[in-house]
Image 1 (spheres, helix red, strand yellow):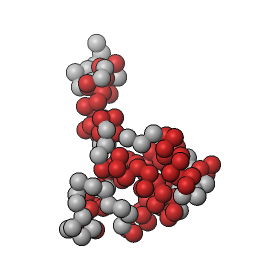
Image 2: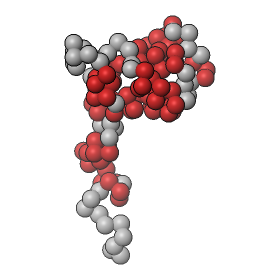
Image 3: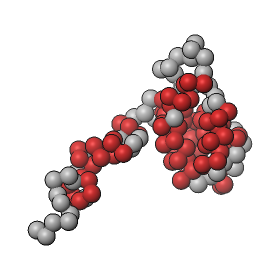
Image 4: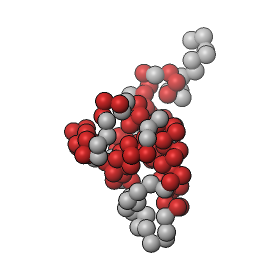
Length: 128
């Protein structure tokens, strides 16, 4: 998994204006790319090893991420270069937040009983 220091180093080397990138943009980028893995692969020729992240994002994916993350093309490319391997081979933490089901499971496994919305055995609308 890439460290924050390494992410900053890679983005700085790509001449990205780090002061203009928000944490929310990075989080959105990582989560969206995780959701789009199959779509990213579909654009690539069958010779692309599905176990390895493609070297660049398809134009359609790049454009989508530019719009959603409010970033320019070069920033999207730089972020992809920095985190593509982590997106392709996520650690346990990233796997735990990739979709609604994994978030639900993470709460159940890690003390989610303290949060009513994640505890299916508690009816928050009952008068008990």
